[in-house]
Length: 213
Length: 179
Image (cartoon, each protein chain N blue to C red):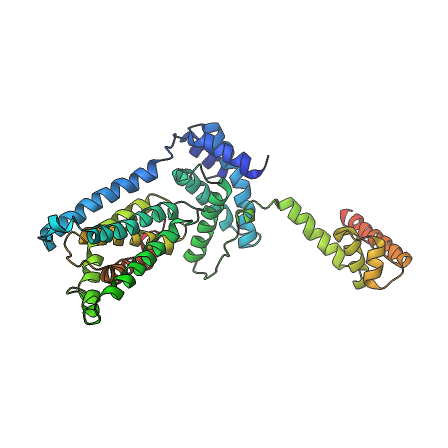
Protein backbone atom coordinates (compact mmCIF):
# COMPACT_ATOMS: atom_id res chain seq x y z
CA UNK A 1 0.00 0.00 0.00
CA UNK A 2 1.24 3.44 -0.85
CA UNK A 3 1.76 5.80 2.05
CA UNK A 4 -0.62 8.33 0.52
CA UNK A 5 -3.38 5.75 0.31
CA UNK A 6 -2.76 4.78 3.91
CA UNK A 7 -3.06 8.40 5.02
CA UNK A 8 -6.32 8.82 3.11
CA UNK A 9 -7.73 5.64 4.65
CA UNK A 10 -6.73 6.68 8.17
CA UNK A 11 -8.10 10.20 7.75
CA UNK A 12 -11.44 8.77 6.65
CA UNK A 13 -11.54 7.02 10.03
CA UNK A 14 -10.98 10.19 12.09
CA UNK A 15 -13.55 9.69 14.83
CA UNK A 16 -13.45 12.24 17.65
CA UNK A 17 -11.44 11.01 20.65
CA UNK A 18 -12.28 11.96 24.22
CA UNK A 19 -9.15 13.18 26.03
CA UNK A 20 -10.22 11.67 29.37
CA UNK A 21 -10.88 8.17 28.00
CA UNK A 22 -7.57 6.70 29.24
CA UNK A 23 -7.95 8.00 32.76
CA UNK A 24 -11.47 6.58 32.92
CA UNK A 25 -10.26 3.23 31.64
CA UNK A 26 -7.52 3.00 34.28
CA UNK A 27 -9.82 4.29 37.04
CA UNK A 28 -12.51 1.75 36.20
CA UNK A 29 -9.98 -1.09 36.04
CA UNK A 30 -8.48 -0.03 39.39
CA UNK A 31 -11.88 0.12 41.02
CA UNK A 32 -12.67 -3.42 39.89
CA UNK A 33 -9.25 -4.53 41.15
CA UNK A 34 -9.78 -2.93 44.57
CA UNK A 35 -13.11 -4.74 44.86
CA UNK A 36 -11.44 -8.00 43.89
CA UNK A 37 -8.68 -7.37 46.44
CA UNK A 38 -11.14 -6.70 49.26
CA UNK A 39 -13.06 -9.84 48.31
CA UNK A 40 -9.83 -11.85 48.39
CA UNK A 41 -9.03 -10.57 51.89
CA UNK A 42 -12.54 -11.36 53.12
CA UNK A 43 -12.72 -14.94 51.84
CA UNK A 44 -9.06 -15.95 52.03
CA UNK A 45 -7.34 -14.06 54.87
CA UNK A 46 -10.42 -12.77 56.77
CA UNK A 47 -10.94 -9.34 58.19
CA UNK A 48 -9.07 -8.58 61.42
CA UNK A 49 -11.58 -9.23 64.23
CA UNK A 50 -10.87 -5.92 65.99
CA UNK A 51 -11.45 -3.78 62.88
CA UNK A 52 -14.03 -1.55 64.60
CA UNK A 53 -11.64 -0.77 67.42
CA UNK A 54 -8.67 -0.37 65.08
CA UNK A 55 -10.50 2.13 62.91
CA UNK A 56 -10.56 4.52 65.83
CA UNK A 57 -6.77 4.57 66.12
CA UNK A 58 -4.36 6.87 64.33
CA UNK A 59 -1.98 4.01 63.58
CA UNK A 60 -4.59 2.28 61.41
CA UNK A 61 -5.11 5.39 59.31
CA UNK A 62 -1.43 6.20 59.07
CA UNK A 63 -0.88 2.73 57.65
CA UNK A 64 -3.82 3.04 55.27
CA UNK A 65 -2.73 6.55 54.27
CA UNK A 66 0.78 5.38 53.50
CA UNK A 67 -0.25 2.44 51.33
CA UNK A 68 -3.03 4.37 49.61
CA UNK A 69 -0.59 7.15 48.73
CA UNK A 70 1.68 4.55 47.13
CA UNK A 71 -1.30 3.29 45.12
CA UNK A 72 -2.24 6.84 44.07
CA UNK A 73 1.34 7.46 43.03
CA UNK A 74 1.27 4.23 41.01
CA UNK A 75 -1.96 5.35 39.37
CA UNK A 76 -0.51 8.70 38.31
CA UNK A 77 2.72 7.11 37.07
CA UNK A 78 0.89 4.40 35.12
CA UNK A 79 -1.15 7.04 33.36
CA UNK A 80 1.94 9.07 32.52
CA UNK A 81 4.01 6.09 31.38
CA UNK A 82 1.19 5.07 29.06
CA UNK A 83 1.57 8.31 27.14
CA UNK A 84 4.54 8.63 24.78
CA UNK A 85 6.95 11.44 25.49
CA UNK A 86 5.59 12.26 28.95
CA UNK A 87 8.09 12.30 31.81
CA UNK A 88 7.21 10.76 35.19
CA UNK A 89 7.34 14.21 36.78
CA UNK A 90 6.47 14.94 40.39
CA UNK A 91 4.60 11.67 40.85
CA UNK A 92 7.96 9.91 40.90
CA UNK A 93 9.00 11.80 44.04
CA UNK A 94 5.73 11.18 45.90
CA UNK A 95 6.42 7.53 46.82
CA UNK A 96 9.92 8.14 48.27
CA UNK A 97 8.58 11.15 50.19
CA UNK A 98 5.79 9.07 51.73
CA UNK A 99 8.34 6.38 52.58
CA UNK A 100 10.73 8.89 54.16
CA UNK A 101 7.94 10.48 56.22
CA UNK A 102 6.87 7.13 57.61
CA UNK A 103 10.51 6.16 58.25
CA UNK A 104 10.97 9.30 60.38
CA UNK A 105 7.81 8.44 62.29
CA UNK A 106 9.06 4.88 62.79
CA UNK A 107 12.41 6.10 64.11
CA UNK A 108 10.69 8.38 66.61
CA UNK A 109 8.39 5.57 67.67
CA UNK A 110 11.30 3.17 68.25
CA UNK A 111 13.19 5.77 70.27
CA UNK A 112 10.24 6.08 72.64
CA UNK A 113 9.94 2.29 72.97
CA UNK A 114 11.89 0.57 75.78
CA UNK A 115 14.96 -1.13 74.41
CA UNK A 116 13.83 -4.67 75.06
CA UNK A 117 10.62 -4.22 73.08
CA UNK A 118 12.08 -2.58 69.99
CA UNK A 119 12.79 -5.78 68.11
CA UNK A 120 9.26 -6.97 68.70
CA UNK A 121 7.88 -3.64 67.52
CA UNK A 122 9.80 -3.97 64.32
CA UNK A 123 9.18 -7.65 63.53
CA UNK A 124 5.70 -8.00 65.02
CA UNK A 125 4.37 -11.53 64.66
CA UNK A 126 3.92 -11.65 60.90
CA UNK A 127 7.02 -10.16 59.29
CA UNK A 128 7.80 -13.42 57.54
CA UNK A 129 4.51 -13.60 55.67
CA UNK A 130 3.57 -9.92 55.29
CA UNK A 131 5.59 -9.10 52.12
CA UNK A 132 4.48 -12.30 50.41
CA UNK A 133 0.81 -11.78 51.17
CA UNK A 134 1.01 -8.19 49.92
CA UNK A 135 2.67 -9.42 46.75
CA UNK A 136 -0.10 -11.96 46.23
CA UNK A 137 -2.79 -9.35 46.85
CA UNK A 138 -1.12 -7.00 44.38
CA UNK A 139 -2.02 -9.31 41.50
CA UNK A 140 -5.53 -7.99 40.66
CA UNK A 141 -4.55 -4.32 40.53
CA UNK A 142 -1.33 -5.14 38.71
CA UNK A 143 -3.32 -7.02 36.08
CA UNK A 144 -5.75 -4.11 35.82
CA UNK A 145 -2.93 -1.64 35.30
CA UNK A 146 -1.31 -3.86 32.66
CA UNK A 147 -4.64 -4.20 30.89
CA UNK A 148 -5.10 -0.42 30.88
CA UNK A 149 -1.52 0.12 29.68
CA UNK A 150 -2.05 -2.26 26.79
CA UNK A 151 -4.71 0.14 25.53
CA UNK A 152 -2.25 3.01 25.76
CA UNK A 153 1.12 3.41 24.07
CA UNK A 154 3.92 2.90 26.62
CA UNK A 155 7.32 3.49 25.04
CA UNK A 156 9.50 2.73 28.09
CA UNK A 157 8.21 -0.73 28.88
CA UNK A 158 10.25 -1.47 31.99
CA UNK A 159 9.26 1.79 33.62
CA UNK A 160 5.63 1.36 32.64
CA UNK A 161 5.69 -2.13 34.17
CA UNK A 162 7.22 -0.73 37.36
CA UNK A 163 4.45 1.89 37.56
CA UNK A 164 1.86 -0.86 37.18
CA UNK A 165 3.67 -2.76 39.94
CA UNK A 166 3.46 0.26 42.23
CA UNK A 167 -0.26 0.58 41.59
CA UNK A 168 -0.71 -3.16 42.21
CA UNK A 169 1.49 -3.18 45.30
CA UNK A 170 -0.14 -0.06 46.75
CA UNK A 171 -3.62 -1.50 46.34
CA UNK A 172 -2.46 -4.91 47.61
CA UNK A 173 -0.91 -3.37 50.73
CA UNK A 174 -4.00 -1.24 51.39
CA UNK A 175 -6.43 -4.14 51.29
CA UNK A 176 -3.98 -6.25 53.32
CA UNK A 177 -4.35 -3.61 56.03
CA UNK A 178 -7.90 -4.88 56.56
CA UNK A 179 -6.48 -8.21 57.67
CA UNK A 180 -3.12 -7.40 59.25
CA UNK A 181 -3.08 -6.48 62.93
CA UNK A 182 0.40 -4.99 63.05
CA UNK A 183 0.18 -1.37 64.11
CA UNK A 184 3.72 -0.01 64.43
CA UNK A 185 5.16 2.40 61.88
CA UNK A 186 8.45 0.48 61.99
CA UNK A 187 6.68 -2.68 60.87
CA UNK A 188 4.75 -0.99 58.09
CA UNK A 189 7.65 1.01 56.72
CA UNK A 190 9.78 -2.13 56.50
CA UNK A 191 7.63 -5.11 55.63
CA UNK A 192 4.78 -3.43 53.79
CA UNK A 193 7.28 -1.44 51.75
CA UNK A 194 9.20 -4.62 50.98
CA UNK A 195 6.07 -6.25 49.57
CA UNK A 196 5.27 -3.20 47.45
CA UNK A 197 8.86 -2.97 46.29
CA UNK A 198 8.78 -6.61 45.19
CA UNK A 199 5.68 -5.85 43.12
CA UNK A 200 7.47 -2.89 41.51
CA UNK A 201 10.52 -5.01 40.70
CA UNK A 202 8.44 -7.80 39.20
CA UNK A 203 6.48 -5.23 37.20
CA UNK A 204 9.71 -3.77 35.83
CA UNK A 205 10.84 -7.25 34.76
CA UNK A 206 7.53 -8.23 33.21
CA UNK A 207 6.86 -4.89 31.53
CA UNK A 208 8.90 -5.55 28.38
CA UNK A 209 7.18 -8.91 27.91
CA UNK A 210 3.62 -7.84 28.64
CA UNK A 211 3.46 -4.37 27.16
CA UNK A 212 4.99 -4.64 23.71
CA UNK A 213 2.77 -3.29 20.96
CA UNK B 1 4.55 29.17 12.97
CA UNK B 2 6.80 26.58 14.57
CA UNK B 3 6.46 22.86 13.87
CA UNK B 4 5.12 22.42 17.38
CA UNK B 5 2.42 25.06 17.03
CA UNK B 6 1.36 23.99 13.55
CA UNK B 7 1.33 20.25 14.19
CA UNK B 8 -0.33 20.55 17.58
CA UNK B 9 -3.13 22.64 16.07
CA UNK B 10 -3.68 19.96 13.42
CA UNK B 11 -3.58 17.22 16.04
CA UNK B 12 -6.18 18.93 18.22
CA UNK B 13 -8.51 19.43 15.28
CA UNK B 14 -8.01 15.81 14.24
CA UNK B 15 -8.85 14.65 17.76
CA UNK B 16 -12.05 16.63 17.54
CA UNK B 17 -12.96 14.67 14.40
CA UNK B 18 -11.70 16.95 11.63
CA UNK B 19 -10.66 14.46 8.93
CA UNK B 20 -8.96 17.08 6.78
CA UNK B 21 -6.71 18.28 9.60
CA UNK B 22 -5.96 14.68 10.48
CA UNK B 23 -4.88 13.96 6.90
CA UNK B 24 -2.72 17.08 6.87
CA UNK B 25 -1.08 16.01 10.13
CA UNK B 26 -0.37 12.52 8.86
CA UNK B 27 1.14 13.72 5.62
CA UNK B 28 3.31 16.28 7.39
CA UNK B 29 4.41 13.54 9.78
CA UNK B 30 5.18 11.15 6.92
CA UNK B 31 7.80 13.63 5.65
CA UNK B 32 9.47 13.98 9.03
CA UNK B 33 9.34 10.24 9.66
CA UNK B 34 10.81 9.39 6.26
CA UNK B 35 13.75 11.70 6.96
CA UNK B 36 14.23 10.37 10.48
CA UNK B 37 14.11 6.68 9.60
CA UNK B 38 16.29 6.96 6.53
CA UNK B 39 18.88 8.89 8.53
CA UNK B 40 18.79 6.19 11.18
CA UNK B 41 18.74 3.16 8.93
CA UNK B 42 21.16 4.47 6.33
CA UNK B 43 20.42 5.44 2.77
CA UNK B 44 18.36 3.16 0.55
CA UNK B 45 16.85 1.18 3.39
CA UNK B 46 13.74 -0.56 2.12
CA UNK B 47 12.49 -0.86 5.70
CA UNK B 48 12.25 2.89 6.12
CA UNK B 49 8.95 3.23 4.27
CA UNK B 50 7.46 0.28 6.19
CA UNK B 51 8.43 2.01 9.41
CA UNK B 52 6.89 5.27 8.19
CA UNK B 53 3.59 3.50 7.56
CA UNK B 54 3.80 1.57 10.82
CA UNK B 55 4.34 4.78 12.77
CA UNK B 56 1.56 6.64 10.93
CA UNK B 57 -0.77 3.80 11.83
CA UNK B 58 0.32 4.01 15.47
CA UNK B 59 -0.12 7.80 15.49
CA UNK B 60 -3.64 7.24 14.24
CA UNK B 61 -4.64 4.30 16.44
CA UNK B 62 -2.94 5.60 19.59
CA UNK B 63 -3.93 9.24 19.20
CA UNK B 64 -6.01 8.97 22.35
CA UNK B 65 -2.75 8.75 24.34
CA UNK B 66 -1.90 12.31 23.37
CA UNK B 67 -2.59 14.63 26.25
CA UNK B 68 -3.62 18.07 24.89
CA UNK B 69 -1.99 19.69 27.93
CA UNK B 70 1.41 18.42 26.71
CA UNK B 71 3.45 19.48 23.66
CA UNK B 72 2.89 17.43 20.53
CA UNK B 73 6.40 16.92 19.13
CA UNK B 74 7.80 14.90 22.09
CA UNK B 75 4.77 12.62 21.82
CA UNK B 76 5.38 11.99 18.11
CA UNK B 77 9.12 11.59 18.64
CA UNK B 78 8.66 9.01 21.42
CA UNK B 79 6.37 7.07 19.11
CA UNK B 80 8.86 7.12 16.21
CA UNK B 81 11.75 6.15 18.46
CA UNK B 82 9.75 3.26 19.90
CA UNK B 83 8.98 2.00 16.39
CA UNK B 84 12.65 2.27 15.44
CA UNK B 85 13.79 0.32 18.52
CA UNK B 86 11.09 -2.25 17.89
CA UNK B 87 12.37 -2.63 14.34
CA UNK B 88 15.95 -3.17 15.57
CA UNK B 89 14.70 -5.76 18.02
CA UNK B 90 12.76 -7.64 15.35
CA UNK B 91 15.63 -7.77 12.89
CA UNK B 92 17.86 -8.89 15.74
CA UNK B 93 20.19 -5.93 15.94
CA UNK B 94 21.16 -4.93 19.40
CA UNK B 95 21.38 -1.24 19.00
CA UNK B 96 20.59 1.52 21.36
CA UNK B 97 18.99 4.72 20.23
CA UNK B 98 19.94 7.58 22.50
CA UNK B 99 16.94 9.39 23.88
CA UNK B 100 17.19 12.75 22.24
CA UNK B 101 14.73 15.53 22.31
CA UNK B 102 12.02 15.73 19.71
CA UNK B 103 14.20 17.99 17.58
CA UNK B 104 15.86 14.85 16.26
CA UNK B 105 12.68 13.86 14.47
CA UNK B 106 11.84 17.37 13.36
CA UNK B 107 15.34 18.26 12.18
CA UNK B 108 14.85 20.48 9.14
CA UNK B 109 16.97 18.19 7.01
CA UNK B 110 15.08 17.16 3.97
CA UNK B 111 16.75 14.71 1.58
CA UNK B 112 17.58 17.41 -0.96
CA UNK B 113 19.46 19.52 1.54
CA UNK B 114 21.32 16.43 2.60
CA UNK B 115 22.35 15.72 -0.97
CA UNK B 116 23.57 19.28 -1.44
CA UNK B 117 25.68 19.04 1.68
CA UNK B 118 27.15 15.73 0.53
CA UNK B 119 28.03 17.11 -2.91
CA UNK B 120 29.67 20.14 -1.40
CA UNK B 121 31.73 17.85 0.81
CA UNK B 122 32.84 15.86 -2.24
CA UNK B 123 33.87 18.98 -4.11
CA UNK B 124 35.78 20.31 -1.14
CA UNK B 125 37.62 17.03 -0.78
CA UNK B 126 39.11 17.49 -4.21
CA UNK B 127 40.88 20.71 -3.22
CA UNK B 128 44.40 20.55 -1.80
CA UNK B 129 44.52 20.48 2.01
CA UNK B 130 45.35 24.06 2.91
CA UNK B 131 43.09 25.55 0.26
CA UNK B 132 40.23 23.29 1.39
CA UNK B 133 40.65 24.53 4.96
CA UNK B 134 40.61 28.16 3.83
CA UNK B 135 37.49 27.77 1.71
CA UNK B 136 35.80 26.00 4.58
CA UNK B 137 36.76 28.73 7.05
CA UNK B 138 35.76 31.63 4.87
CA UNK B 139 32.78 30.31 2.91
CA UNK B 140 31.19 27.84 5.31
CA UNK B 141 32.23 28.82 8.83
CA UNK B 142 32.00 32.49 7.95
CA UNK B 143 35.37 33.74 9.17
CA UNK B 144 36.60 37.00 7.71
CA UNK B 145 39.65 36.96 5.40
CA UNK B 146 41.69 38.49 8.25
CA UNK B 147 40.59 35.86 10.76
CA UNK B 148 41.32 33.05 8.32
CA UNK B 149 44.73 34.58 7.61
CA UNK B 150 45.57 34.79 11.31
CA UNK B 151 44.36 31.25 11.89
CA UNK B 152 46.46 29.72 9.13
CA UNK B 153 49.42 32.06 9.61
CA UNK B 154 49.25 33.49 6.07
CA UNK B 155 49.03 36.98 4.72
CA UNK B 156 45.55 38.32 3.97
CA UNK B 157 46.38 38.67 0.27
CA UNK B 158 47.54 35.08 0.05
CA UNK B 159 44.29 33.91 1.69
CA UNK B 160 42.20 35.95 -0.74
CA UNK B 161 44.01 34.48 -3.72
CA UNK B 162 43.82 30.95 -2.40
CA UNK B 163 40.09 31.13 -1.61
CA UNK B 164 39.38 32.67 -4.98
CA UNK B 165 41.28 29.90 -6.78
CA UNK B 166 39.60 27.24 -4.71
CA UNK B 167 36.15 28.58 -5.56
CA UNK B 168 37.06 28.72 -9.25
CA UNK B 169 38.35 25.15 -9.18
CA UNK B 170 35.12 23.94 -7.59
CA UNK B 171 32.99 25.86 -10.09
CA UNK B 172 34.96 24.33 -12.93
CA UNK B 173 34.43 20.86 -11.51
CA UNK B 174 30.67 21.38 -11.29
CA UNK B 175 30.53 22.61 -14.89
CA UNK B 176 32.51 19.57 -16.05
CA UNK B 177 30.12 17.25 -14.26
CA UNK B 178 27.07 18.94 -15.69
CA UNK B 179 28.20 18.48 -19.26
